[in-house]
Image (cartoon, rainbow, N blue to C red; front, side, top):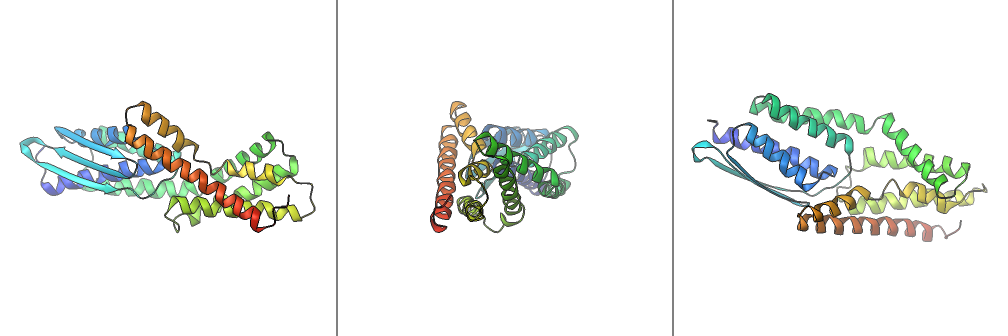
Length: 259
């Protein structure tokens, strides 16, 4: 591979873009490192040294002829998006198999991001939110009215996820705000006179916010030997759970604790 320094940096930049987005979407640290390594080696890199934790990515790539490039990426966000994660896995396989021009890699990446942004606002995801919240409300002892109200509040959570999340970049603040909105919306129905169980409605909708995947990945990272990443992700998951609890309790106290 006789690329210039500019091409090598462009290749590494795109690999980091893909790895960073995978990490934000909830991908495992080992998967992110493997993806970056495979992309770089498919273009002739002789050695790839990635170091990934939940808040930072550092990669040094060596090519034939002694050319070495290093880039660092700070990761400030986190989310759970299986659709985007699947698309990025597919994109990385496409790059490794077809080896498109390096200067076109970033264009391919941005195209996949735009496609996934459309899917994230799709009616299918909205339907999934509604079905999940309604089902959990019934599962934990709610009645039919509780499930319908939980599904309605799920629409509000979907709107926050699709349109408001970009405004609040900090994941902890977003979870606090989303939990408060959800709790306040559920508490409002306690004054409606309907035979509702506010706690069951809240449980159904809280399940949409709980960072279950992040906590699962934290345990998996620890058992895979990525102790630092696992502990960081576990701490982040516990903090997000605390923010959900704080937001919900704040809404209950603010609205009188009735229900």
